[in-house]
Image (tube, rainbow, N blue to C red):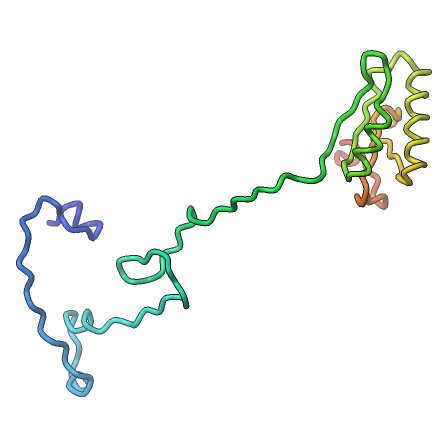
Length: 175
């Protein structure tokens, strides 16, 4: 019965060194053509392994190319150019309109949440009006994501919004 090292096909480090026996030279093809091959003779005939052209990486014990995926690293990791931003009114119940316009020009998509102004309908309408003027200046539409127009979506520059399917929320999924 073999040991664990033999099971994995590795040499046993604790075994005494074996004296290497000289293998007999393999027979020529003409001699093998009329004979039946045995297991020992098939080991001598191995298919030729071709490495990829210009291969400089490691190889397996069988001589095949070994692709170590940890070797492939990208040094320059680019940060994304665009973002999805969430904005709500500040403690003075105002929106940073200039900053929003700058971020939209850079391609960021912005979700404006006016729900904190639920009891201040006048201030909520003023914020909506400011957003409408900014949207007209930038040439972007403003989409309402809820029925009360308290959650608004402002797509960034070069962002495409599919308006053919306007099923919002979870109610259409349940029907």
